[in-house]
Figure 1 (spheres, rainbow, N blue to C red):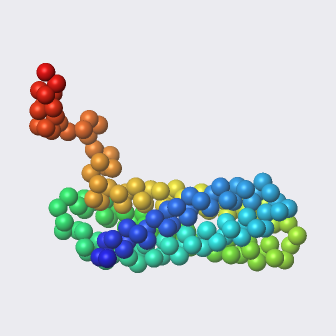
Figure 2: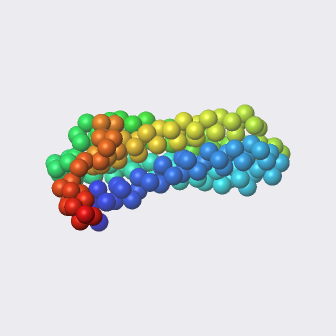
Figure 3: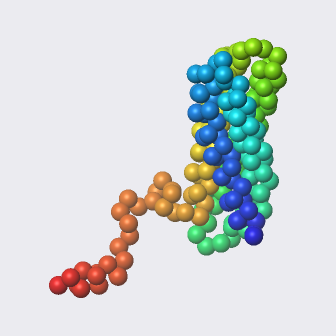
Length: 168
């Protein structure tokens, strides 16, 4: 497995994790009394998101070295992806730390303070947005169809003309 492939495998963990933590935290808010199990699951996902974000960050530079000179690589997207990834990683780690703090508080109290769960939800929502943006820009690096300037109509191919002649 080369560096780019490793990055492609690892980078999905924080994106999916961040998106999963939001509904889990909503469920925690809705089930305050029995929410400890859901809270623990939420925090586990948040911690995996943070760890996955750090792993994606660490594999990003070697992946860049691998793809930057390949034909069809969009250099501007690499820089933008790096900038977004740094912020998304910081957000994921901070949100995971907040979640770990919430577990400690939950062990000492009968009810998890809703304000704490709300803060985790806000952090997870912002992290999910940052991860989604980072993933989207990352896709632009080697996928021209994912770019804003992608053509709306697919390009015309000569093979299409031959298919039309066959219908007559």
